[in-house]
Image 1 (cartoon, rainbow over the protein chains, first blue to last red):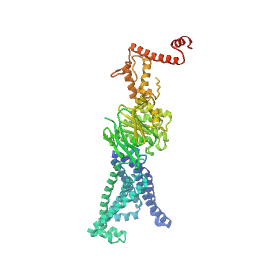
Image 2: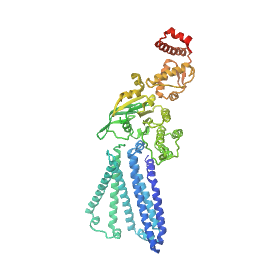
Image 3: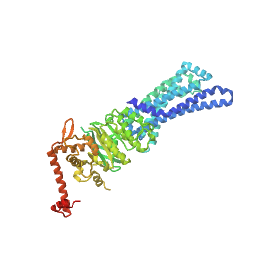
Image 4: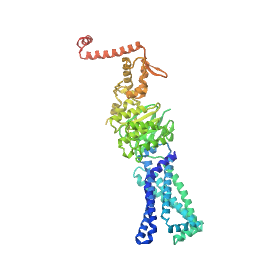
Length: 263
Length: 231
Length: 119
């Protein structure tokens, strides 16, 4: 049953994103075609910059829309008119919640893959490609970059889970459900991030390396990349996010299982 | 064993009590009319049976067990509102029902759709409200459920379609299945009712067999209703 | 066959009456097989339970019998059918005479009206 639910959830969330995906890839491709021309004149240089900005904007738009669609799917399906079908299907509420979470995360991962492809397309021009290969060849940089991407993904998933859990709590109220939802989402998010910072602060009491996170400042991105402490910090953050996300998942699921009151 | 047992069911929304201490039993193979004025609590009761609301007190048992996945397999609910995903086509909706309900008879659904002139490839957002309601009726009646719950199935429908709906209901009424119909268009439907329940302001005023009521009072169910709920 | 109902009297009683007429008049020929309960219910637009109850009552009167696997049949007992017919006729006659009495025709007057003045 879970797979069936996920099929319908995923298709609904992703349906619209096909446009965003196409635009992103097209803009990235066009940008790639223009890049070699950039050094020739100011005109081409500016145009190149414009396309780079457009690519970044398209990527952001893709993620933003994916996020909003996921939240919309959850709320429409669980609390609006469509819920008359959802709650009468022969599935448990736990399965409903799990399906929404898994399909939303899946959409995010697909969006991530599309972004990576777009990035690869953008940078496939010889000069930039050389620079990228240079960074990726160094194992230390490679680990760090991958970890960094992982942490960013986990952060987005965390925001998503906060949104679903917050909405579940918010929609329990009698009136102003959306407002209450936003407040709950914010509250849960702030508390989660607070706990995570607290935990890493606690760790820094025992680990002098991690303590540097709070004491020294990085003067540049290069320093961050080369400092071995950064890798350790990223591992810790990733672990924390995984724990937090699992906790948030069960929080929301348990909240939904307690029951719904559909208008 | 009774199909549906409702024990001391109460539901309040904040201060407002929508249902108070409702006790009911529904046996298999009966057509029951849930009758009451607007705001009497009929829809609230039906939603509680279908797990769309959580009781404040009391319980709803289907075949002796609390409502859950098993009861949802055997209960087909037709609400008053349109609840389908409007971005899907009729065809896709049929497939979804097939996916989730083992007892969904897709051939019967297609036949009913043809009778009602509903084209399978049309997107639901492009259907008029009346057509959407007919579609929802088809989806419910195409299931071989043990309990059909219909909330105001005849409202806002033209008389010819009303006859067709009553006909479809009687035709789909399989041995052992029960139908719970909530309505205030009593005169049209009272002929097919086995039992009636009168609900007023969240309380059950009367449960009786329709013919017994006629026998005792010499009045139709509709007249009984009007008498009881005179403003 | 056409069924007519009013909602003021128990439906099943009305069904019994109308089915009885159909049997007695030969609409359902003696010995013929009746349509299934479900079909009859659909034709009459009533609840199959109610139709079943009505048919059971007719079975009690002997006008209809059930053959386990084949369904329900009208009786072939001509004598019984005739008696039922006469019982109905008596009821109609009593009503006619009663109504005629209301407008001043006594029994002899009513009979003579039928004999001579009926157009």
